[in-house]
Image (cartoon, rainbow, N blue to C red):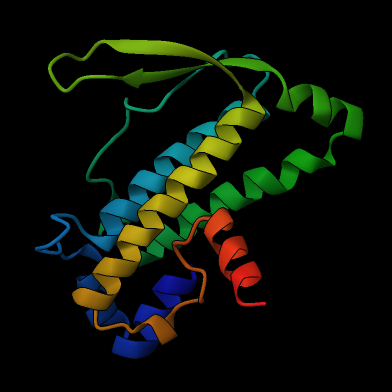
Length: 177
C-alpha cells in the first residue's frame, strides 16, 4: 500500500494508475502484475489458514489480468481484505494457533511450462506463510526496479528495506555496526 501511496503522491491518481498498470520494458511486467501475483499467493495461504477443511493450496491455478493488476483502488482493497483475514487468525487461543500453524497442507505447483500437471508437495500452514512472505518480498524487489526505472519514483520514495529479504536487512544492519 505504501508504494501505491507513493505513486499517487508523486504523480497524482490518474497518472499513478497508468504507471501501476504499464509494462516495464526491462521486466516485461507491470507493478500491478507483480502485486497481483504476490497477493494471489498470500491470499491463498490466508484463506487456507482460516479454513481447517482445506487440504491443498493451488498456487498456479490463478486468474491473471484481474482488476487489481490495473486498478490501484482495487489493489488497495484486496490488500486490506487479506490483512483482515490475517487480523482474524490470531484471535484463536494460542494453543489452537500453534496447532493450526503446523497443520499439514499440500502445496501444489506446476514444475514445467510444458504441461498443466500439478505436483503436490507436503507442507504446513506455517511453512507456506513463510514461503508466501518471502515470495512477495522477491516480487517487491522487482517492483522497486520497475518503480525506479519506469515509474518515476526514487529509492527515497520507498521504505529503505522495501523489496529486501529480512536476512539482507539484518546483514546490512550488523555489517554497518
